Image (tube, rainbow, N blue to C red; front, side):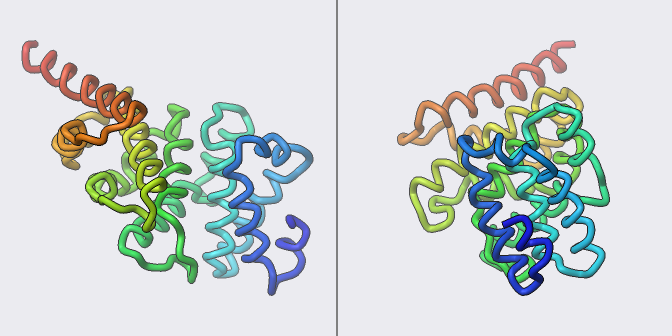
Length: 223
């Protein structure tokens, strides 16, 4: 598939879409790290960006996020921190379009898959600042208040769990908490916590994020 994406231009986007979908599976992620797959994807992201093939470049970048986004390895730092590849930018731009039920680069992306990619990217400390400044914070309340994401109840649950997990991850940077509050996430998470159908994972994420934002805010007020 990687060779097809590289050398058969009419099939590039289709091959990359298949690779992207497969890359979401934990069971096969390690196979992506064999050989030069990651470097090949990063080079395609650069090359297709230069040639104006936004969709192919974005899919290659998002696949990188799926596979190594949550790692703090040398490979992850080298590829994901490269602004020319633009992994976080592509994911956020595609998410903004998906939230509005619009295509990005001619492709309709699912909200849940993009939120999952951002959640993975939010694990390394190096990425937290970039995510907070990317414009995604204003999208998270919209997603969390949506009763049906991607037209599917299970995907809604998944997207809400990953969105709240991302917020919790960002709260570990103290100077990002005011940005989260300004984006309305304190009020939004409080609303989520009041839901009757709150699952264990979602409840854990919301309570963790609220504790970080509320408790630290109270500490600041007391000081």
